Image (tube, rainbow, N blue to C red; front, side, top):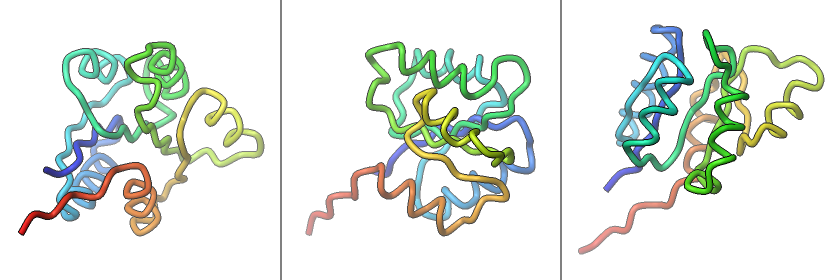
Length: 127
């Protein structure tokens, strides 16, 4: 069974690019366009990893990550922050909010896949 990934991204083009890259690697992907929708969905479904855009309409990705980390159910859920704002101090701020790792936009697909693999268990192959 492949890992399931929730993509939280408000830009439809970025959502498509991320989804395609992950689906090509065999991941099961679901996407939402806001932090609020992500929190609602995470209350009902289980994911192996979350890709969290930081700049979102309404609640931003840092606040959503803080809220998730405040819930014991999500204490160890890998949350990879994705942002175009790689300004000084922002990485530290995002990681302090509880993100497991940070990837900057434009996303390097190889780095993204390597990072995701480092947080998800490899599949067990049975003969």
